Amino acid sequence: MTFTPKTPAFEKAVKDSRNLKAKPDNDELLQLYSLFKQGTQDPPFAEAPKPGMFDLTGKAKYKKWQEVVDEGLTYQQSQEKYVKLVNSLKEKYGFEG
Image (tube, rainbow, N blue to C red):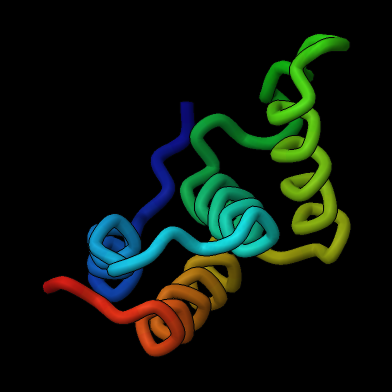
């Protein structure tokens, strides 16, 4: 397993995402998930198990992560986008921090 360094801004954004005053919508949650997974590479996409046929939530998450991979985002770029997304969600939903 390869260690993927995490920036302090990314680690703070991960914590902050858990303290939003309201739950983001499903598209925003999928975006957070996919950027987090690509940003941490735990596991790398190529090693991630595919969801089962009846796991609709898992399929949606996997598909969104695949889109990030297909964009060619590095883990660093994914962490930067994750931080920007969390900051925009803090403005949209409020933040308890």
